[in-house]
Every structure is written in structure tokens, then in C-alpha cells.
Length: 94
Image (cartoon, rainbow, N blue to C red; front, side, top):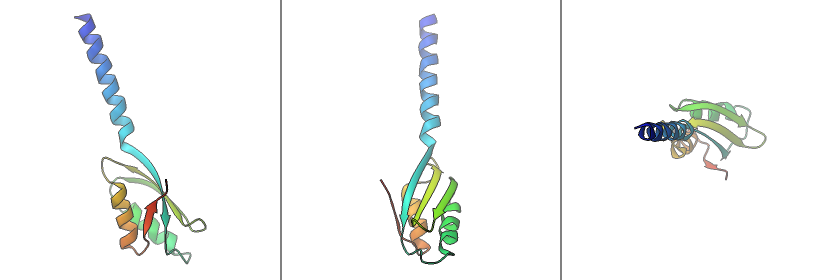
């Protein structure tokens, strides 16, 4: 009986750790068409409006956006689609 309880406890711990780490992701996007100082604001706003996005940092100089998001609520494809629909096509930087 004690062995079974220990095994269940171990399984519950592993599952909880996996679930906690599975949600938060950070990706850097290369963003095209950013030519003026208003562009980063538009990119940040388009990404920030997506449910599950936690933080967005946009660099006009490097033409990138770094996004931290919950992968249980949104996807990389949704992020790329949001910037593209706003007029700024993007792609993930490996």
C-alpha cells in the first residue's frame, strides 16, 4: 500500500511539473515592413491583443519582436498571423 501511494505521488509530481512548464513559451520574430517609429507600436499592439500573450518587446532597430505567450491559449501561427494582418509579415527566428 505504501509503495502504491509513493508511486501515485511521484506520478502526480511529474504530471504537475510537465503541465507547469508546457504553458509558457518565448519566441523571437523577424518582422518585415517596420520603416517608421510608429511601426513597433502597431506590431506590439497587434500581438498584445491576442489572448494568451503575456509580454511583447519590439525592437525597431533590429526589426524583431520577442513574445512570451501561453501555448495552451495561443500558437506561433496566431502570432505570425496577427502581425501579417497588421501589415508586418513575420517569421520565427530559430
